Image 1: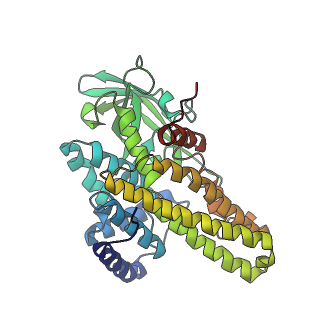
Image 2: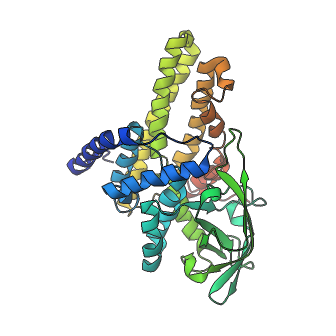
Length: 377
């Protein structure tokens, strides 16, 4: 597979790099990481800046390769990440672009791109564990509406969201992977209660969401009724495929910073640590090549990442944890100080083998869909 870039792609990279160099010094200071309303305002403001400059549609209208270049160059330049816009830009938006009706695309895509509306993800449930298809949130059809009752947990950015990509069970008699539908839920609808969950680092980017007879228009269903599991696989392929491009670049940058810090504080003299950092360097270089392969595959197949995204997600989750374990080794006692670099990231990294599909689920996907092994009983 050819992983080189065309002249057009390199021209896009050069133009983007020049624009970032011009605009980033003019941005206001970033808000406190624990202030999610402030972060929402900052993140949506950056998204509007991208929109006005013609870069906002790179997540959907551009080829997967241009999307990868955009994320790569943005991270290298230290540009703001998607932040509170994460679910809308990288999950819900691409899903609606791929599966939505013309009316749905017209209604939701432009506000996401402008930074006018923020989305959260309502997939996981307290009683479902890692088995997403065991969800119990019920949607009963009542004329032109669904009446939804149930609860969700680990709902990303629910505290500041306008919309939620919501999975519901529309046919409780169907086998569990059927009878599921994908809805766009307005977060200001009556009957919704949001309770933020506080992480180890003190942040509240996740929440519990309780739904009590919430009415959602049938027109807000993306895909056919009871076909939501297939639509969800489209969402998760984006989540596990191209959404981590910037984070791989960030990890490679952090690795270089760790090596410099180790040289400065004397820990570089430890041959075990040097070997560990060298192995991580090779690991992230391989993950970057795998990212390029996944992007090339998505471009060949029409823009939707394939099961190879699960291979990436599985290895990346563990590599990120290992990276920040190495950071703790470099920092020594400083690794206990939340104000030190990399400490909050280390706490965050603990969730990566759970978020976006647990490592156990990713292994099942790789075994069944790539290796062709039989399903477990």
